[in-house]
Image (cartoon, rainbow, N blue to C red; front, side, top):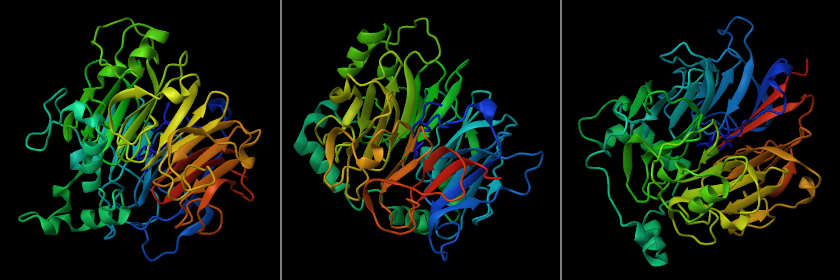
Length: 487
């Protein structure tokens, strides 16, 4: 949903994908394509059923061009230019109130003003909030205020909005199931969210401005001195940040354990270091501790960049991460109602826990959707698990999977997957040979296949006249592609 999507895109540089099949030194002129629907941009316009080029902002001078596309965004989209400018289009609600974009309220891409001159190197969009990382290693975020951390590092959870639940209760099918059923009121339905965004001010006495619910100016995320953030992942209402030494911070909503803090704390208003990701020791010892879900001490040890966690992704209410290259372990935590945590059950996972079913598989990247998770191994295999109501797992059925399932469809035969991204209910993989495969929910043409028919197996997307593809990034109702320019 990804990142990030959400941080629905795999993140090793949510958003997960480090993206790119072309080395930086070989960069050429680029073009961005989009398929699907941005209702906040042009609600009266029909969805785009096949990928079409997105116009680069005319106001951006100096020979700038597209560099990256970003996952996530419910009704809006984001990309990054070669010169490090953040480019946005669409809006966050059906009334054209663009609290998270450039304020133009339309489908014309514009540069987004940030309170820094440092180039943007990574960006991710969530349900109705955004986050970026600059070349200086700083992270900024804006959008729904409940997703924006306080300015004090390590502060207390938001007063009056937290609810501590005994972590031991999470193991009970009955207790967790009842709690989740009570919240299963069209959970994650984008239309519900958009109505809330556009009418929230009318439902709260004395509040007349959307800015009472939105932080329109990006805020610097404080995670401590000498900490360099390399990537962020945004979920439905939570955010993760990864540092250059493999530490992970989380903040926002944590009611299903998606912040990995061992409880159902509903709101964490300051970035908190996820304890299980701060394990001393190396290799097998560290992996064992994560697998057992055991919190370890915060003993300071000598670290090199990327020694612990190398990739993160946020789904609607769950999170995923991948350990260092020597282990490549897949770790998940958070909401588990549809099996999207991959532990063989539908319980919420309140602490980071390694997915034992793929313990022997070295994972390279991961992407989380609203109810599902897709990951890629180091040898290019694709695994899927979680909810499958629209075929988003690509297994050929609509049955959920509570443990990772290897996809072996005909269109993946002899393919080496390199980039993965998840939308709310659709998935996309970019293979090493440049072929794009999409599947899942297609109500708005987000699969780019020229129709609105859902697909339950990976299906090749034909791009006439398109040169080499570099990146794919899924939003809630849309998909973005970055490709070499055909001219």
